[in-house]
Length: 71
Image (cartoon, rainbow, N blue to C red; front, top):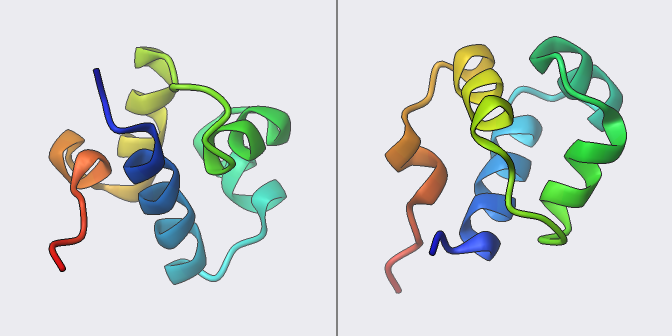
C-alpha cells in the first residue's frame, strides 16, 4: 500500500515549488480543487488516472511521488 502521507507531502511540495495555488495546480493537472485538497490532506489515495495527470503536469516519476524523506 502506498504511503499516503508521502504522496500528500510530495504533491504539496511540488505545487509549492511551482508557486501555484491549489486552484491553479488542479486546473493545470486537469483535476478538481477538491480532489487536490483531499490528496494534500492525506484523506484519499489518488486514483491511477489522477496520479498520471499529476505526473504529466509536473514531469515527475511515480517514485518521486512515493519517496519518503530519509532522516
